[in-house]
Length: 497
Image (cartoon, rainbow, N blue to C red; front, side):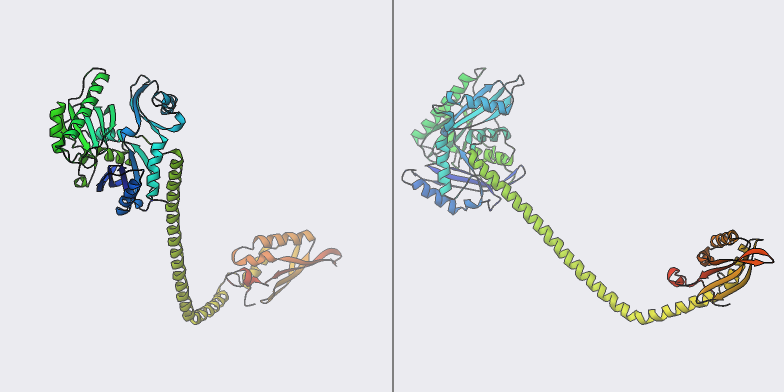
């Protein structure tokens, strides 16, 4: 299931200690929200570790967080290699092919990842290669699954510790310095040169570092730190070592321990003060530098220079599906909100328009009698206007009929006007062509108020004799029917004879 909280929590646990750092991440900004730890002496075999983890997870509601696990250095094999490639895909293939040279296991039994520490510019890269047996990771996953947690990712402590130092150099550190991170079950040492990781080493141990005057614990810590710095000096190209050591922890007090170890190691020892630089808020909630946990949060925020991921591929696919499902859920919720908002707006618009229609209908009902009176008066005024208008009168029509007639070859003997039916006139013409040319002349003059002339058509042309010469009697009709339907201005038919 998708996480119920937006908190990103880094969880670290073993048979001696359980602790988590809860944070709120916005972009690359990290706010420390809470840190809790529990010390004890548990065992996997008798189930006491599982029981303690269940109580720890339930007591702090870790099931609701996005949980990230950190695997300690001593649980894996890590090598800093120089490989002849700058392509991450080729580098991954080289590391996988040479994996069996570093561990006594078949490559199929290993979880392998790597990160490029430095590209040297000559086609070679310095790479941190990490190999861990699947049983180690599966052991952690089994405990977490029983506690109700499915981790989003599993990080490697060395990459986290080095990333924290590269992102924020400890105050007062020289260009080359060592960092020792201690927990009740392990000691991890890295050597940094500027912002580059140069050396890493981790050993398992069992001490209560909160008792700084414990002789055995102080001696073992001094021996491991001294051995790590000596090993780095032997492996370094210039044969020089680190003269400063900065201490980090998973919640233990370090001030008194640094003073005691400094005398045994013969180096300047300090508490790493760069942890507060890595958080934008909530630094007061960090009881110790917590560099490993803070480096893991840098990877979560996407700002870590190096990240090693050890989550098995099958779980990575499940997490990808969860992320996709959560994304689709957010998209679905957004779409639903938009749909509901659009529906509410539509309903509101429908009600508004119905209310407006009702209001307009009420106003129309109030104004309808007056509008009917106005319309009737307008019709009467139009009739009066037509009666007094000179345009389109019967006299104008008659004048046009006469002026359109040819000068010779035909005459008009009779003219009839009826306001209900139209105009008819008769005459005689020498040929039918005279009649047709006359009709063409009438229709051409049928514009504006005289548009009615375009209706002129011949009713008949009958052959006859006059003074022993052949002639044609004709009748031309100009009808008024349906004139009002075709002309919004009203009938062009004259109202007087």
